[in-house]
Length: 149
Image 1 (cartoon, helix red, strand yellow):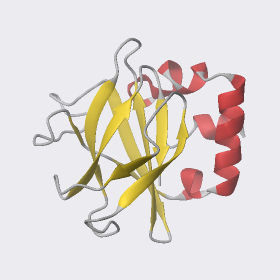
Image 2 (cartoon, one colour; image 1 turned 60 degrees about the vertical axis):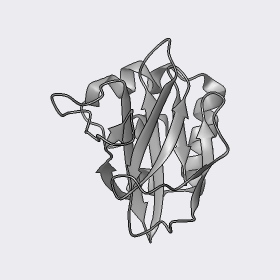
Image 3 (cartoon, helix red, strand yellow; image 1 turned 180 degrees about the vertical axis):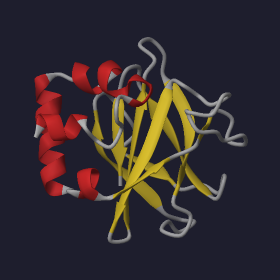
């Protein structure tokens, strides 16, 4: 299961996600992730969508864009009208506060997303906002992975 988790459609190692974050998770965190994958197989098998991010909530870019944020990588896995959003802060020292685009059609304006996993302290629930279609505002601790549904 560990190898499947580390191969989460980010081949070969998109901007260092595997090396900088996933491979450095503590064994207890990997166990929690593996349990989450068993509960939510969409994390491995759902359709993959790289998500745009924004520090100011106005200008959104993808991490592979020339001017895109290279410290936060966000993606969604979607299956059966269910979106699971994953994001990693690759910065080793600083919190990242970013808006991340989510599927515009799936999320109502008064909706929210709940935290399924965080490798460090993170908000339990986030409100959907109207930004770049729809987005949520993530606060991601240094060198952390967060997963919301």
